[in-house]
Each structure stands twice: as C-alpha cells, then as structure tokens.
Image 1 (cartoon, rainbow, N blue to C red):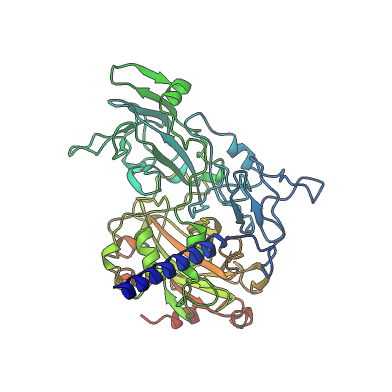
Image 2 (image 1 turned 90 degrees about the vertical axis):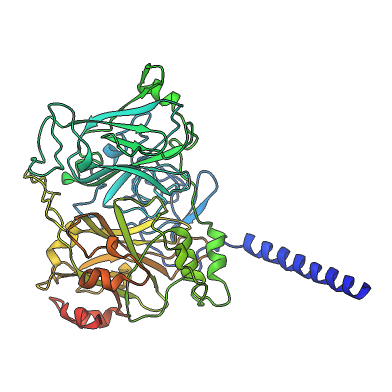
Length: 538
C-alpha cells in the first residue's frame, strides 16, 4: 500500500512539474526576438510625412499609431505587440488610397465609429479600432457597430443605398460568429425610392432611401421585411458589420452616401434619436478593437508540437495543391494541427473570424521554406463590372457578385497583407477563361509577373505576424460572395469534406509552387499560362 502511495505521489509530482514547465514554456512564446532573420520592408503604412525617421509616431495615418521597426514590429497602445505586414502597392481600385484615406476616416457618427481596414491604412496601432484584425478583405471596408437593445425595443436605421458592388448588415456574437444578415438586394426601398441593386434598376437612380430595423431574438416564421436579428436575448452585447464592397471609383468607403441615421424605438413608443439613441444602446466594445479569437501563444505552441514541421507553419511541401473550404475555427484548428484525429463532425458551416454569411471561403497555407514564388490558378467566375460607375442596371446573370484573393498573416494576428479583386485580374484572364495570380515577396517578384505579361501579382508578406513566430508563414484566401443560385461551382456548393473538386470543377483554385522566380521567368512574356492549366490534375 505504501509503495502504491509513493508511486502515486511521484506520478503526481511529475505531472505537476511537467505542467509547470509547459506553462513556463508557453508564457515564453510570442516574445519579441529583435527581428533576427526576418525580412525588412520600406513601408508599413502610407509614405511617412514626419521629417524625423526616428520619431515614435506615424503621422501619415488618420488615426496615428507607432512607427514600425524595420521588420514591422510595433507595440500597441494597450500593450499588444505584432509584426505588421508590409504595405502592398497601391492600386487605383483600392477602397482606401492616399488621396481619400483621411476623408474616409472622417465619415462616422456615434453609432458607426468609422471604417476599419488592414493595418497601415487607418492606423499602425494593433490595439486601435481602425485596424481590422480578423483577416479582412481589403476590397471592402468594414465598420462595426456595437450595441445592446432593451427589452421590447428595436433600432431603426435610415439612409441611402450606396453606390457600390455589394453591401450588407450582419450581426455577430462577441467572439465573431455570424448570426443574421440583411443583404442589399433584399432591402425594400422607402416609398417613392428605388433599390439600385435590383434587376432593371439603374445604379445611379434617385431617390434611393431605405429603412432597416435591428430586433432582438430569432426571426419569426413570417419574417418582416428589412429586419436583421440579433438571435440573442434583450440587452446582449451584439456586433454588426456594415460591409462595403468596391465603391464606385472608390469615392469613399460608404459609396458616397454617408452612414445611416439611427433611432431607438422603445417599447412604450418613445423614439430616441442620434446621441440619445447611442447612449441608450451603448455596449462595452463600441469604438474599440475586438479581441482576437485565437491566442498567439496557442498558435505558436500548436506549431511546435513534435509532429509539426520545423518551419513552424501549417503548410505542406506541395507542388500543386487545391484550396480547401473553411467551415469554422474549431474545424480549422483540428484539421490543421491534429489531422490524425477524425474531425468530420466539426465541419459545420457556422463560420468564424467575423465571416460573412453571404460569402464562403477557400484557403491554402504556404511556406517560404518550401517555395519563394507561388501561382494561384483557376477558371474565373463572371462578376458585374461596377468600379468605373457604369449607371446601367447591375448584371443579375453574373455567376457571383464579388470574387477576391488575399494573402494573410496567421489567424492569431488576423492582418491581411494584400488582396486582388475581380476588377484587378479581369484584364489578365487568358483565352481559356483562367486567371493566374503570382504570390511572392517583392524581392522575389519575377520580372514577368506583370499585367503587361498577362498575370497579376500579390505581396506574400513577412510571416505569421507574431513576435518570435515564423517568418516563413503565408496563406492565401479565396472569397465567393453573393453567388447566383444558378451557378453551381462555388464554395457554397461544397457539401462534404474533400468535396471541393467535385463541386467547383475548373473553378477550384489551385496553388502551384514555382519555387524560384527564375522558373517563372522562363515562361516568357506574355506568360504561357497554359502550362499552369496542364500542371493541375483533375
């Protein structure tokens, strides 16, 4: 008996020591390592306007922020540090450019605290509201309203339909799981007005007024028009994204119409407006940065498990790989780090990372340890042409409303590096209807990775964004938004695990590892993109 007791005490001591050692090890992760070995870039925001290169403040962003170190390292105003991704080249179609970014930042009210976008556009402070930290698509701008609706009350928003490609209101839980959505085309206009997103309606139509309500609880069986629901009890803190995709000529993030006015209609019939309505619906996260939904230390710990590769990224060493569908955070982590454990039961389309209910996503992890130059290749779905402000009614027969590719940091940081939209790749689609987007660091960009040579280029980035993390990390995301029900080859049509090829067919994006830029440059100018198609085996 005494021997058994000694053994149990010894075993307990070993477990406690191992637990303490593990705790100490995990606490030591995600620490600044001084940038040793990481790539450096010239700019992590708009061109510097301050005369002193050693100045601590970045004067070129509307909301300010720390001036990044040469490797992108910054310490946020609340003590959270990150490695910012490099600033990608400016495109004329960008929703935020140097000529409009200050104007964009000034468009706000007490309910809508202004636009959010990738780091460097509105701020370099990772703790500031103006930086989107949930893998945003920089072809659109988010603004997030936080509120609590009293029992029996509802919020009423009154505004104008914007001049843009796609637009919606989506409600969320505090940890970024989507709840409900009201989509642009489904919103009935006010009496005497028209909805420019509907069939046969000119996109420049006037008047274009609408009224949308936000209500507590679940939608009823007979859903009332123009209402988005919290799917939560009264007085629950709710977030709501206003998404703004491809505003005409990038006039401003709201498509030239400003943010809607807000009223609170109380149960007793009283109506509060503007500041009074904001005060009566206040929630803790209003105007603040949302917390990350994956811990930086957890991400590094998972990438350091004994069976993980030495580069500390989730990437595999592939030559050609199809993108896979994103279902939710839990399935993503299990599939990424514990592939031997069955996780099929987790593959439920509930989303996460503040995902869009109108969108489905595909992704592929990359690593600089396996290749410096990658190509994303596939057939391009048809989408409307809107950026140049064409007033003709929007094409309702297009395969989908919006398409994009983005490079991103790790989910534990959630910064986006670069994006191209359908508007950016349209001029490089080959005669077979395929696009080819080259992904590399600027230093590894092939000389023929240009629009002139028939391909589009995106910045790879400088790693996972985590201090002390991986400089090799990379990932590319594909978005299909507001898909036409008649189009049966989108991420929406993937109904089972590993069913991507069956569902998307030729529209499934494949990522090709070209390894070095010399191999890509050997394809000439114009680039022989038929060789990419030949590399993809159905």
